[in-house]
Image 1 (cartoon, rainbow, N blue to C red):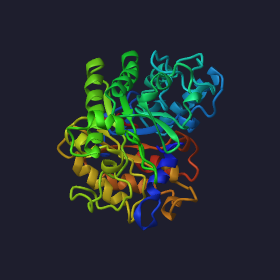
Image 2 (image 1 turned 135 degrees about the vertical axis):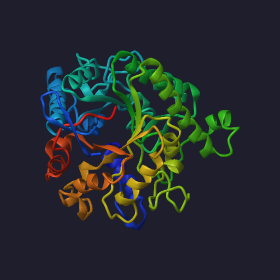
Image 3 (image 1 turned 60 degrees about the vertical axis):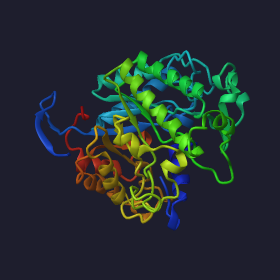
Image 4 (image 1 turned 90 degrees about the vertical axis):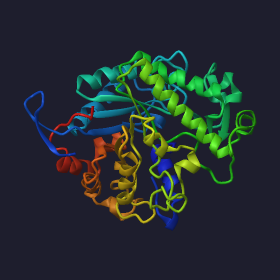
Length: 415
């Protein structure tokens, strides 16, 4: 979720697609709901609520606690109205926190000033209010991004990145923690797991940011870490993948040790590898491959059940030659087949009606066709829409069409 926002990185990643392409069961049951309504079979119907750069919420920094709370509850109420059942709230966008963390500062996206107490507990409130509405609350964390700028002096005094400048790499106009340092991995895990200790989260959620998306002409400087820790690996790429694999395995096991009912999910970039690179890859021609460029071996995580669910960001239209939604859904269904990892599909609602997008996205029925296609694959257990602002505003009626065509009855998430 390419930040400045997921939209920006999706655009950047997809601009690298070849051919000049632009980037990033439902069956019915007879069970009665709590009010006697007929309910659809279990499926996840989710929405991402992005806080980075105030993308979805809060609408701007510096609102009062009451205003922030009212906006958050409005997003939850919109989810209920759209017959969704899961909200994925970004609570650690840039090495900060939307809860009273003893490890990291309050997020600047709340008050406008990093480290300033907003006067309430956004994550605690979100969990309570989501559950009161019958919604699941998945807490969305970004493990390694520190700042959307390169000046450590702009971070609040006492920030871990200022206390440990050797942990930080400047790359592509941003600051990142170095995934190759074991002490960094231990710290970010502890900081994120604090929320699992505190709140009855339905899930911990990562998105597609591990090692950063490649920037032409720039090098992610992890030479010292590689010299210290990479000697047993055949290449730097293999070592980097090992670092991310270790994060995923350790987070999954620690979440279960703290709160066994809390699940762990990841929403990766939608292309693992192209088939031209690897015969196990998808029939795509994407310029970015998560295995090679982000060092995220997402297929292995699914096949080895290291995550409870996966939500690949399939942010492309049906028929796009370089990355066809109709090619990627069956590829991911096959990857999940026979595993305990549930497959949900990330949907690019934000593209609907955007004049900068291909013609397919000007049709309000495009997303509805996505859900119709996905129903052919029993491994697909739901969809998540990016993002909350578009779920509410629905500029060309694409979300309304999805609800009318597919969400005629309420549904519970898979258990």
